[in-house]
Length: 283
Image (tube, rainbow, N blue to C red; front, side, top):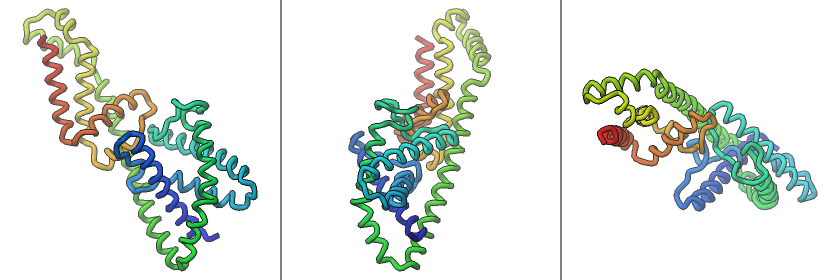
């Protein structure tokens, strides 16, 4: 079997996986949900899994052997991919913690069983048509198609990886900006407000707690971070479910909420937060 043909199958199965997951998640959430971490319409984990299914299980004569091989193989592939992506980018793209018999939220028995069934569908239902699709293509045409796919896919991977790394830098900078000298700034702000309003220190601190001040700082820094995101960074932020580090999880989740609005809304949101904060202070 030619490696070029295998690569074409991998890309085509990645596209089919993206179509399946996007339709499923869009129906589930009752809104358009563009699945996948990459910019293009493909989910490589589906392509890798399906291609390995065809490559390793084609010689099996027993359907049960295919089922259990795909079930076990999908669990290994999902766990390794989830662990590796989390280690590199601190982000989570699927979480099975709410499902029974899960392992660290990365894999679970019901989904592994589903992928075992999917392996049967791929091998006996889809692959015959995939072979017919590629068998009519001359070798030169296959090589050209593979080169084009590879160029687009490699560029997509590079852009997405860079955006994820830059997003992590922004999240870390936002967390540090929120925490930087916050106690001193709170005390300085309270003292300045006391002098301007001629109120006692204790009375001001009763009205504006340290937690309120920290929340105000958090909203300010999140607004700044949102305004500095480019569209690639915004895309990969929206594609993730959450971030594993607790500080990243909170900041990332709040940034994702703001991204549900128009990008220009971030500054308006920040102004609104500031008005609410000062309104609370005056009451």
